[in-house]
Image (cartoon, rainbow, N blue to C red; front, side):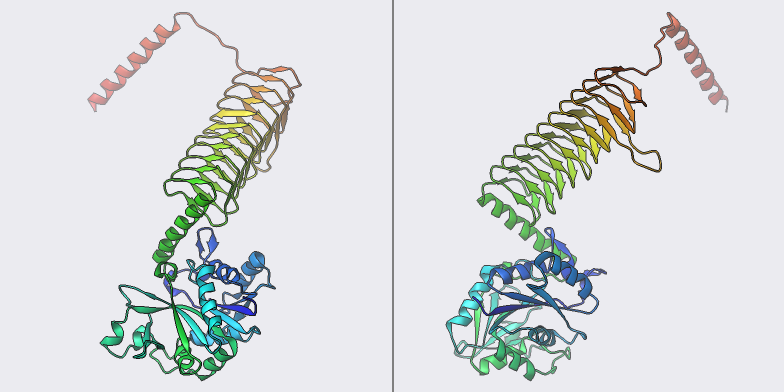
Length: 474
């Protein structure tokens, strides 16, 4: 399908979103709204895409499409004054040289390439046909433009809701989906003929259908109404997102991934076969999940890499981090940005890491904070250990050598290094480097006072009785 360009109309103000962010940049399943019609157009064979934007949204949309697609493939054109969809299409067509053009809306995230290929094929099948439009049949057409037909059943026009003339037109259940394939010269000519003679005082793109019908002809291609949903407010955004998440789960399922119980996986996430994604999981952003990995219930993983056969136990949170092959995380662990958990390492329940590497086979299984650290191979970090990395002004690093053992309830005051195979005794506060194979011990000497517990108990009981009596006198 060469000689095909797409124009995506994205200049609307999106006032019903009630947001300072341009409507088409609102995220849905991990990508901005506008990504999906652009992707659909490229999948349908478009060689270029022109996104028509408003002056206020141009900079943000320019930055996004250049980063995501490259500015040679996707470019923007500005509709300086909001004068309707017909004027927006005219602005977009000024940059089109190809023989055929797709016209899409920027707020249709459920549209896919196969929908558009069917439309372009219909246009190409009849050499004299000027325009093909996608329509769908709905039970409640209120709010949509109706497809009007001649007595022979041919498309004659589209009538917008507010311009409907009588009850017979209102009863029509075939609606306009806002998706068109046209011959560029014919559409450019039709756009030059339309006038703003409607309730809105705008140039309607839909008016070109009547012009095409009177020329070479307009043809309707019936589409799936579930795929042609537009997003105008936050409720519709969430409804469309639910559909996208279901599609994404189905796609991964067909590629050998088990996805259970409504897990929500962004479109940008990649997952290899034999991975298992359990109920209630959120996989976001640029996350990559390796073959055979298991992400258990309630976990949230953002912009992170989970290597093959790793196990993420329930309710763990992982952000901008890397988890190595066969590593185990959680339950209830928190890997903050910059955490690197190497092969076969363990980060257990209620352990938090940040800018820290646990090398192969290292373990921190219980209730610890490891910030700005490097934990050597097969080192063991006991429960309640804290890397004291921040002095109020700067962050400092803690380095633990391979095979070292850090006893429970220890505090390592950075910058500090514990050498290979060294021991840090339980309850120690480490303020100096510990040489390899040494034992670090820093705690107050224990003293036992025989019989003192009985005297202490009697004294405390008497004090409590005096307090109770004093309260009664008030």
